[in-house]
Image (cartoon, rainbow, N blue to C red; front, top):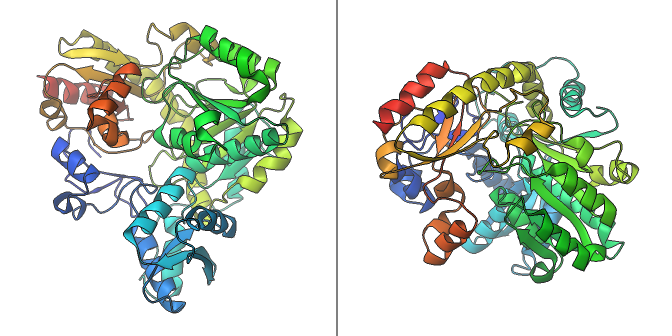
Length: 502
């Protein structure tokens, strides 16, 4: 895919039925997608799977509901029987007629047709990453004679779990057999780590959680919605660098704190806190430290020595062709919690579908080469942006605000990663509509991806005065653009940016 080609609205990125992104080439398309404008949504052939119900899932649910005689009902399919039970528990207080169902290997929750219940179920599955895999739905439709043939794609013909665990274990510096646990999505990994740690800490009377920094929206949602008493147990510290404030909170509530969740670097400001100090603070107070290094990749930074659990979206960089959803939870073998988490984490994991793992295992060999290329290309893109008169702010791993913290973790001085966020002077749509780069959600593919991140992730905040004030206090420009640098020739990427900036 050329970096210098506009991709029509709604086309999958990449051109696979299982693609994890979809082209939103203009600001009008972005806003129409967020506002569910049929003029936009009816043209979309896909979308990020946790946000846009895959057509295979929709067809499989309709067929299974018909086979079960559930006339007048809707059905959400889940990745496991355990997930179906959790979804049912989530829906039951508002919809007591919801029930767990199973049909020919599929599991889910059925309920009387209702837009409100459907949306509530979708939100739960979005947060937890527990929805059915598109490949599993494809296989179900194929077996039922409703789908002519499965997607032709390269797959690994050996022990796919062992291959993937081996690469992930080497990336983190952990034992693949004892300390690496695979799951069906990066969000499922976050939810599993949070749930396992939460269960262990609740037994010790600890229920408070700290969100350090502005994190990915569904990680925020897990902390806001799944803590025992959110008004008391959820604490947000926006400034990742303010160790004094974090220390004061621990001094006041240390015996009640279950853990800290942070991203290193954060998404989308790409800020790196002093992770060693944070890990030491957690260790001193008996709190669990959960770290997500997905933005930079564990191939670039070594976070595990300072964490008890690490979570990683393997959808990013490891699945470099952009057509697999997967994740991992990694236990720090030196953590005092290591044995406990080796026992606890598996019970919270959503299993990856074998075809997804076989596909991931086939492309994960390209992971190190992609990271090496991005480490060379990203500094050149940043240099161009920082020198351009229309670019107001540039955020990346070696930003002066957290360069030192990042380099303490970096596996080499040039391990810059592939993510850049920036804000420009002038109308956002004037730039975004013109830039000839792939535009859509996700990151960490062979191809570049650019998006108006705040509009896609936090449209509810963009469209209200109070929301804009929340963003301002967190240091998030409303017009922030997030660029995932790809493997295209870097001069093509820079030329596309230069053309759009004028």
